[in-house]
Image (cartoon, rainbow, N blue to C red; front, side, top):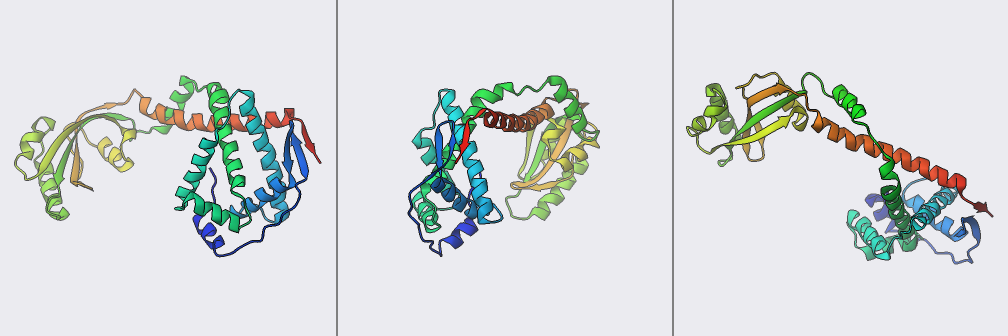
Amino acid sequence: MRIVSLIFIALLSLASFGQTSFAATIKVVVNGTTITDHDISQRAKFMRLERRGKSNNDRLRLAREELIDEALMIGEMKRIGRSVPDSAVNDAYAKVAVNLKLSSSKLTQILNAAGVQSKTLKDKLRAQIAWQGVVANVLRKKVQISDLELDLAAREEVGNATNFDFMLTEIVFLNTTGSTRSRTNEANQYRRNFNGCDNAVALALSYRDAAVRKIGRRHSTQLADPVAKELAGLNVGGISKPRTIASGVQMLAICAKTQAEDLTFVKNKLRNEVGTEKLKDEASDYLAKLREQANIENR
């Protein structure tokens, strides 16, 4: 959701723009919904805050097109028997204010100082919420991603260094003294004496504040890239170099390692990424189709 930048809006709070009152004239009718010159002017002023458009004429043109799209969005929401409650719009307005570290009333004051009514932003938010509802109820079920498609994409994404399943045990030398260097030295000593996961706990008992925890199965893609690459080069019974973490110094021991046949982790990530992209394309095509079928009268 596009919102006004905090820096730019703060600058606007230092200036005041005069409001011009005039009788609104209908400029566009979209399937019976009217858009006035006042609506277009207000949206163009808001676009100025968003730093959209190269000139005022450009913003007026963009505002007209955007308002036509939004009329179609809200109209489609009504067609499927749904509506956007005022409470949802007010909540969205409040979230915009929070993101800008403002109260809702302060956001309204700043908008007014720029000659923009709060209704202008709320109308924009209402259309966005309506379209989200249309996408969720009408389009999401149309987005189908085949398992074959995901398998091929997943196999392309994983390489030799990232296509492993590990059973891991974590060894952490807790930093209770504030000296990371001394803890790292002890961790390196532990690493030199390490002889397999079965003896990890017994060996840790020789050290102060050393914790051992089985973290179970992890696919390479669930690990940070440097860690995955290091573990890929180690055999079962190997242990990674010490790494500094928030609680101290960490090492990972490999208790089991197999070439990954199950690409579920990668496929789930790709399903979200590909699904989102396809849904975006579907929504764009759907809106274009609504425009083609709409009765749009420019006056």
